[in-house]
Every structure is written in C-alpha cells, then in structure tokens.
Length: 129
Image: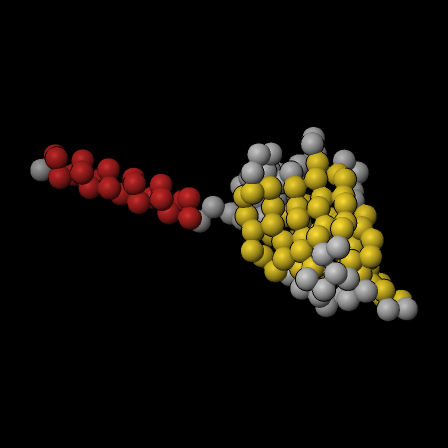
C-alpha cells in the first residue's frame, strides 16, 4: 500500500513538473498606431516580460517597410532590409515589466514576426503581430 501511494505521488509530481514547463508564461507583444502622415505611420510596440528576462527582440517584416526605429534608454536597435533587432546588456525586460519601441513604417498593416532572446539564446518565437 505504501509503495503504491509513493509511486502515485512520484508520478503526480512528474506530471506537475512537465505541465508547469509547458504552461510557462511567454512574453507578450502588441502594436498600436500612434500617428500617420503622408504614407508613413508610427507604430508603438509594447513588450511585456514573462518568466525569463528579455535581452533581445527580433522583428521580421517580409514587406521591408520599416523606415526608422527608436529604442528606449538602455536599448540599442538596428534595422536592415526586412529585419529589426533590439538588444540590451543591462536593462532587460523582466517578469511583469513592460517596455515600448517605436517603428516608422510605410505599411502600417504589415505583419511582423517577433522572436525573443534571453542573455544566451532564443527563448520564444513565432508570434506575429
């Protein structure tokens, strides 16, 4: 009887551990239009942190419509062709925190694929906004 209960508790602990990994919170990102003038639009991307600190954000714009970018203090950004990369060394977005980036684009409705990095590797990807 004691062995059955121990085995059951061990199996339950394993299931909870695996489920917690699957349910780990992912970063969230959203975009909103701030202004539009002469075919150019300014979008604000809001990134909200989750279970892992975010040190890098990559945006892929298949239409190549990004004209300019603005990074918040402590972050740097570079735009080339159809990709935008934002990075930081000492001001990551942690759990429950949020940060905003601005993007000037000639196509306000272009879908942006977003992926995130922690200090060492890719953590979450395949979000499209």
